[in-house]
Every structure is written in C-alpha cells, then in structure tokens.
Image (cartoon, rainbow, N blue to C red; front, side):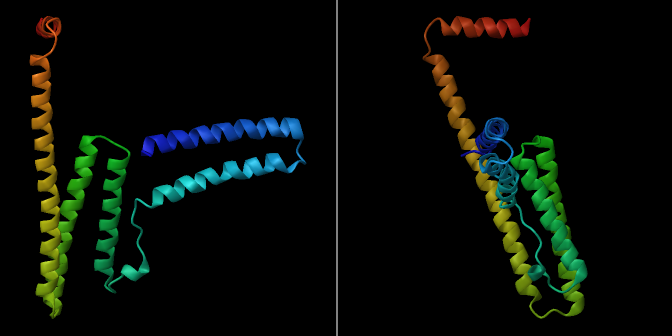
Length: 188
C-alpha cells in the first residue's frame, strides 16, 4: 500500500471512529463501555502512524559511539542529514529541496571522511588504510547507485519517448490535425 493510500485509509478510519464515538455516547451513554473502547481505538491511531513513520529513519544509539566526541557528533549530524533527505523524498518537498538535501549529505560525508582520516593519521591509527578503503568503497557504491539510476532513467526516457512518437505516427488520422491545432494555438 502506498504512503498516500495508507494516510487516506487512516484518516477514513479516524473519521469513522470519531462519528462512531459520538453516536455511541449519544445512544448508549457515558457509562457504557463501548464508546470508551472506540475512544481508545481512536487514540491508538497516532501511535500507529508514528511507529510506521519511524521505520524509515535512523536514530542515534549509544552503541554507535566510537568514543571520540567530535566523530560521534559528525556521525549524529550525518544521520540527521540522511533523515532530512529521507523526509524530503518521502514527502515530495520538491526537486530543489530534495537535491539540496542530497547535496548536504554528500558534502558533509566528504568533509567527515577527510576529517576522520586526518584525525586517524595524527593519532597513528594502525588500520588507517583499511578504514580509508571502507570510505572509498562507500563512495564507489554511492557512485554506482547514481550511475545505475541515471542509466535506468535514460532508458526509460528513450523507450517512452520512442513509444510516444510511434503512438502519434500510428494514431488515427483525426488525432494528427488535433495535435497540430494544439501546437499552433501554443505558438500564437
């Protein structure tokens, strides 16, 4: 079920339960248990919605701590930026905000990787090369995702534009004059 459909469904349930609460209080009275069960059901909906939304976000846990406050703060900020990007995409806030959110994640990740690697170098961290390789692998994986997305989008656009052109070429004769009239009216 899509996010929009889920929200519509929950709003309909909440509305129906609200009407049912009022009607059962009127019909059965304040001391009958049925209206109170409906009130309890109505109060559960925000909890369920909140729980459903939380599964899409990452929360900082103390077990993620590396024991260095500045690095932990960087990691917390990265999680926050990732959650902001997730929110931008999930709530369709607009291409500009989505792009800005993604750019912030990428820029801060690069800043953090550089900073972390310099701190490790200065501290004489023994496995610095292995850690740098983890960073490079993460960047490469992100680049791979982006490249795959671009290829898929290019393929989609190529196929759909060709299909659309073919549709117009093979459309009934009365569609071509209608299209030409629409184009002409836009030019004027």
